[in-house]
Length: 237
Image (cartoon, rainbow, N blue to C red):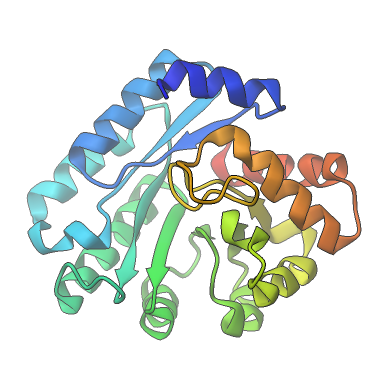
C-alpha cells in the first residue's frame, strides 16, 4: 500500500501521529523524506542489530547528521537480536552502545529492539543508558517487567498482545502504569488479530488499542488519550 493511502486509512480510524522507523542509512533517509512529505509523520534514525556487522564510525557520522533533522524524534531502532544472530553479538553490542551515546549527545529518546537478548540488553542499558528516555519497542520482556518499570522505561505493546496465546503479554499490559504505556503497530510486521497473517499497517493500531483497553478495564477512547499524551511527551510533539 502506498504511504499516502496508509496514512489516509489510519486517519480514518483516528490515528493522528505516525513514527516511521529507520533501521539503516537508506531507510532512515526514507523515513525523513516521508515525514517531510506528510503532516503528522515523524522519523527515527538508527542501525538495526541485524546490520551491526557493517557498523563503523562512518555510520555514527551519518546518524549524527540525520539525527539533527527537525523531523527526527528518536534514535533507533537499535539493540540486540540473538534470535537471528545476523551480526556477531559483540559487534551488535558496540553498535548499540554507540547509538545510546549518540542519543545522549543529541538529547533524543531511543527505540530499543531486543529479541532473545533480555539480560544483555538490560545490562547495556543500565551501563550506558542511564538518564535516557528508553522505549522498549514491541515489548516482550514480561519476566523483567518489574525491573523495566523500576528503571522508568517506556513499555510499548504491538500486535502480539492480541494473539490468543499471549496471556503473559496481556497480564503485563494490564499492570503497566498509565504513565509508562505506549501502543504501536510495528508495521508492516506483527499484524494484530483479526488481521494476523497479512501485512500490518498503521490503521490496525485500533485493534491493539482495543485489546489493551479491555484487559485494563477501560475504554479505547480513554486509553487513546493516555497513550497519545505519553507519545507526545516522549517524542516531544
